[in-house]
Amino acid sequence: MVEDVRPGPAESPEKPLSLKARLFDISTGIDIVVLNEDEAHEHDLFAADRVRVEHEGKELVCILDLSSTLVRRGEIGLFLDSSQALGTKRDEAVFVRHAVPPHSIELIRKKMDGSYLNEKEVNTIVGELMDNQLSEVELASLMTSFYIRGLNSDETVSLTKAIVNSGDTLKLDEHPIVDKHCTGGVAGNRTTMVLVPIIAAAGLYIPKTSSRSITSASGTADTMEVLANVTFELEEMRRIVRKTHGCVVWGGAMNLASADDLLIRIRHPLRLDPMGVMVASVLAKKKSVGAEYVVIDIPVGRGAKIESMDAANELARMFIDISGRLGMKSEVFITYGRDPVGEGIGPALECRDVLNALQGKGPADLTEKSCKLAGAVLELCGKVEAGKGYDVAMGLLGSGKAYEKMLQIIEEQGGNPKVKVDDLPIGQYRYEVKAEADGRIHLVDNKIVNRLARAAGAPKLKGSGMLLHVESGDKVKKGQPLFELISESETKLSNALDLLKTVQPIEFEKVILGKMGETGIFEWKPKEA
Image 1: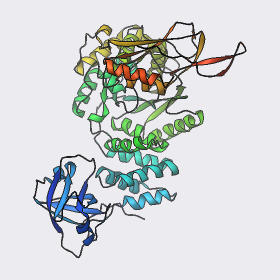
Image 2: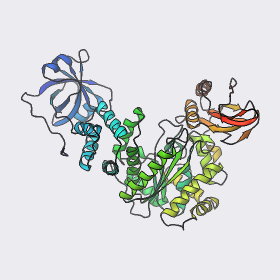
Image 3: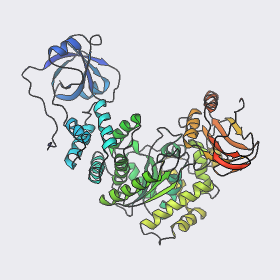
Image 4: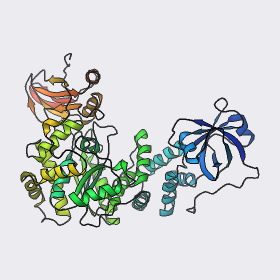
């Protein structure tokens, strides 16, 4: 069995190599140093080897790169990350010696061979991940092994605990603490920003940390940022939640479940999302804020992150199993995910939907889904009787209490508590697309909608995005508006229109011999702006 110990200095028969620091003002995100190729080979050092770099009492294990031109003999190239960690200045003496390879390499190989990892071994991997001891190749291999071999329940629990222990935890000293998560992929879908004030108005505590966009037109944190600050230290988040019972803040600004950010950084470029890693990622964030009850939304359908019912059912079972083993009670909803939720796609446009929904005049699908999820939270923790949660949530919405609570949260997060829908920064450059024939909508494609909204400038340009006028099942007449592209930048709108010539966000049902038949794409060409 591999022992759970950190690698120490290697015993080398040779004296450390003394080199002069050459600094590169480039951040690499991982500790890498560069040696002259010929000189390194003379000391049995090769590319991708680990070396222990020492300077004035500080030391760092780095990955070695070689060059015949970038550094001369007697020099070591230090990138910004490493030079700052060591406190090294230009031309100062730096000592280099061989280092023991990370134990994780053997553990990754073990996982690739189909064996399971115990808790100590998972802790070793996460510890060395946090210490920046693994190269990009090794990290990619780790995620690939998780993807191909999968994680069993014990491994998933161990990974979740290790992620929680990698960062700080929120101590509210209040109960009950609830949370909600959506697996994603659905454009719009700002149910969190409607649900949080409903739950807080009911007297429960919901410290909601949310993410920024990676590939979508807006993450919840991007949308909330239109209304208020979302970047807080942990203690400030605690103050806000204790006072208002809720918040919507950016999780990336705090040291909560820190290893998860590194794992996401690996998963995203590879487009790999192993189910066990996804479950560990979600539940670690919930556990780190002290959640006792969690409701999880798994949208299913083309364009959503989960596209098949089989995968959704398997994921739901895993969420319930793992959350229970971590001391949290959960309920999972598998929801319709083929269409966007709401009308606006992009931060300010989504904010408009949220504020309207909280005042009883928002998109029906956003209001209904938010209240169903909020009702499930109320029932799960015993706040209301089974079967009455939805009605109670709708009552808190209809009475204006949820809207008042949202304004209080906005104020405590540094925003304007008197904000109105008309105050939101909606872009002035617009292009409307209309149907060129009668028909019935078969699908509004989530992925293409997100691509178009991003091309228009979302989420960086808060007032940019897309406004939808139709949804699946709608009958439309020739000349009826389908959607608008909106941007704060004329150039960005032009970019979105160029993309629109190559993609089609709206699919219509085909008519075959006068009858509805198989689905297809309704052909239309956008007019020049």
